[in-house]
Length: 85
Image (cartoon, rainbow, N blue to C red):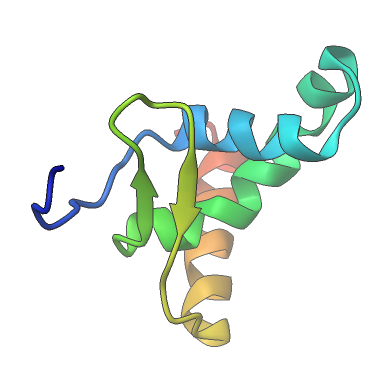
């Protein structure tokens, strides 16, 4: 068994796809909803709360949610994306 301390992962797109496929019945619906899943995963990932297993087939998002900080992170990302940067 491997008892090493887990390290946070920054593979956000893979984690968003896993999360989307867990709640959608088809691949087409998964592709259409992955952007909303990204929005929900971004704050926790940037703050080091995303953990994936070694095989890369499962994920856990563990972090203390701070609503104001999460909203500020998402607003800045949306503003940068809207500005084309």
